[in-house]
Image 1: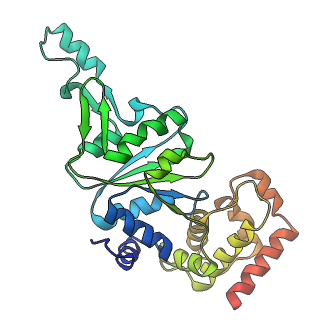
Image 2: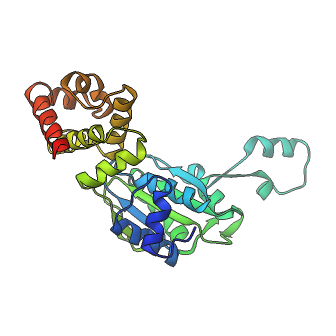
Image 3: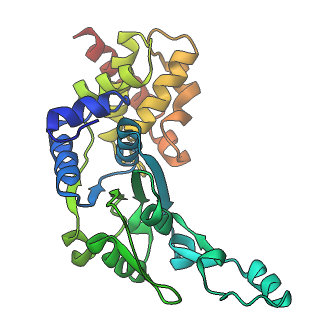
Length: 288
């Protein structure tokens, strides 16, 4: 499917049950047209990772995901050597070079570079990696190539679509940002969040979708350790719908609050009068 206009991007992502606003549609369109990596920043749960998944689904591309974490290195991300096979080869008196394609283990980045298929490469939560790993990515993001000391430079035959995500637990370096198109994804408006819930939870009663979105929006205005994102709104709406609810009340909210809030302190903070107030506001929103 073509991604050459923002309207085409919106339509393509909507076909994968992802509602993109105009800003995101433009960013994805430019990234696809200019063949530049796209860096998506925002709070956890606002749908950054889902953009890459929806892009892969819409274009028929293979999704290759590199989940970043503290201490990630080239052996996790790019390549490693199959040492047991190399050892067996030596014992058998083989003459083939030990550091050759035969003994190479491709990790996500190298797999994306060498794949004959169309690929969407998702480098998820890059802010969890360290400065050294960020620096390594510069060659990949600039030229879509990497250098393996034992083999030399590996270049991609075609540029993959690259999506990087960051929850902004730390600031990324300017050198990395300069090699990407940047887009911030914030929490959606209440109207868009309701539409997202209806799209992602087929058959949910309209009133329940509105109340769920309004209640979660009220939670975000509180001083919580971990305010819920759109992902939590969807999870909660699915739980409520699975229970056969048409609307929310204090009892069902108490029973299912763990779908929305993940810290005991946050759950305790919204008990009693706060909970009642949020429910009343959510019901009022559904009446409007």
